[in-house]
Length: 385
Image 1 (tube, rainbow, N blue to C red):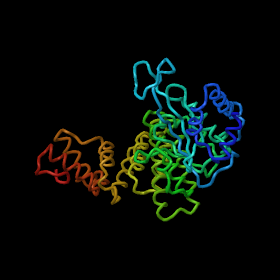
Image 2: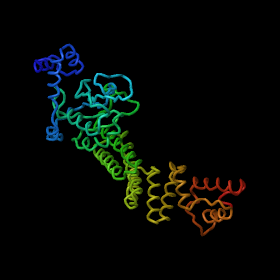
Image 3: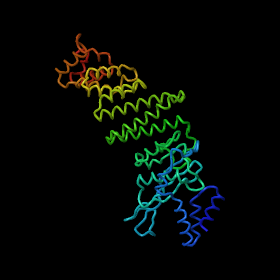
Image 4: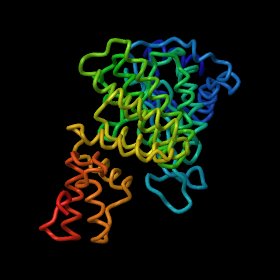
């Protein structure tokens, strides 16, 4: 009876709508319901079957996308019959894991054990969606997978598997201003370069998160992955609108990776990444800032000063406060003592044999002038102390 019902339902509907299955089951007596439920559970592949499946060779549905999300269902008490929509003492939340496709149908949907599922269980559900989706769907990979933002804590665990899937597959996190179901993703640019850019942005975001928690290994891995994805788009003839964004993102990835190298104490690697970043975007201030920091760690103070002055002489960076702060720091800070401040200004702005490099850096001069006025009075300026 159960197999006949399921087969006839698929043939009639040509798709699976679990809500209709359960509606049908609700009209049956408990014994019949148990038979159908057991049969549906029997469709679940074993861990061995999932491990044996060759995901790299799974067919891809072109121009398709999936949306993966957790759906809060109810709160469950110790008694299985005790369910409520709101939390009550001793209760545990129950979620459904859902993967929908762009046809508004389920690839997989299942109620998780009580409590929010672990990263390992989410990875298993994702593998099941590819290797053993709900009938009548067959094993396949979508072009794009969108992860609901509620899954952000699990991204690091999902990332290695997602990144192992064959191109042109790509994935990204849902943004805060995007809706929660598949309809929110219709009309999104599905070109391969656009997907690569979004994928790289997600990698970069993961790198930022890893850097924030001081996990240098993970941060370098994510920034390197983002760089490689973006570099791969360059020979694929991006549009005139895409080219500047790609070059800027390449610069950001390298400059961010340089910051991680600095945190890890590898100034040489940081210096190379920061230099390479300016090749992609000569007006990216953080690339010069990280070069200067790397030179400082390498005890090359004069080179640190030179790179900061070079940056501050660029019109678009002339008022960059971070670079000005860095130049002040590398000069040892602005003296608070009137006599020391006069000596500092004479050496940098007046003496014929003094340090002439910063004399034509307007942003730095303005910063020193403001300090001179505070210490010595409004009638003084850096170039006439």
